Image (cartoon, rainbow, N blue to C red):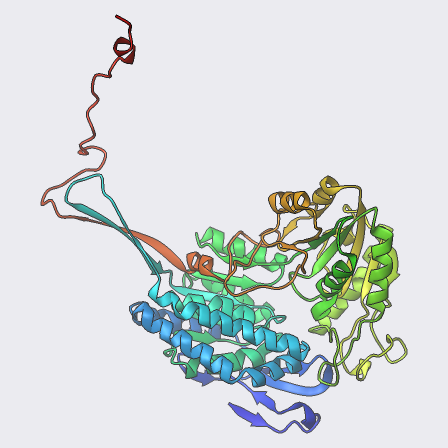
Length: 536
């Protein structure tokens, strides 16, 4: 790793000059082209420079992973777990440095960045011991002198593409369990967070991951990412794991489907947050502000629709609007803010287009004023708004669930408000989008809680808490337009990175045919209880 002075923004840190990592070697792209990663909070801060990989580079990485697979899958699982433990130790040792890079590269607040690194640490600590618990089973046979076993086996070479909003936590959810289970990996980090990806690769190397087991190729989604998906058709990949947009996830699902691969797809969301008439409104407002605007609304689990019982709707709206007006926005390296910039210009551009969608739907713009500039900035803004990619928080009122603004994921600091008459209508509206990722309800009524848990179509739910947030030992994922029912994290993710292998061992010395040679219990003449009970 080579660090160079960043003359334009020395106060922010040095520039990371990174490489692809293929078969244990740092290499340039075959075309010798590069791209830059800049700080979305301060565009003069050049965070890093990285190879702009070609399909040739991606194929070379797949070949390296294929060649390394046989040795890695035969490495005892407890030994693989020991390497996972090393990863956790190195993440802990470098937590502050990694968090600082996350804040520089994608604009997370320092607190969020530290939490993101901690999520990766927790994941490593959880899975280090799973190397001693990749249990199979012994199964009783219906034949004599015959034993039946099941084993978990690694699947093979795994293609991984991750998004930039959680540049360390989400890759750890995929890479760590995949490694633990004995798979090899070709990973394309987000080009919005290439520096974080490069540094994570150095940690994997220092932890003792053998050469070829994890290969990292940098570049854009349209080029390097698309090339990695093509490797499925070329037969190099036996597993694919993707976090990103629903549109790209559908494409990956189609490619994997025709090759009979089961991908892991963690996609977008339009997550409902219900506030019932008995809720603690101050708590609900606090949770709604964070759910809607934390990370500038750039989480797949960010709240999309707030569903309000009519009896408290006006009171909630007044409290919510007052709280949103107090949100502090700006450069997270210059002061304490709730949220910083949009991750990249393309996300800001998409976010700005949503204003026209809301107006066309007939929704009421309760709050929000486009892109933040020097002449158009909220009170207390931190830093220079025109040196970054900042957006006002947006609230749309008088929204109906069939409006486009309520159906589509915006991926930015925007929320819609809908009113309902009762819990039945609340559940109907909450389940009224194509998505099914996260959800939340604020209530103290146990009947409402039960109905919510029982009827919500989301993969994850909170009661009296935010729609966002995940713990390393709980399953994470969704269904519908949010994913294909696969799960990340906890013991459940092991099913995604292993295949079951059934083995029977016949010790009888002769051919025994199940179902045909089985010695079933002979049917006997049944006792007629009526004769036993007849009176004499």
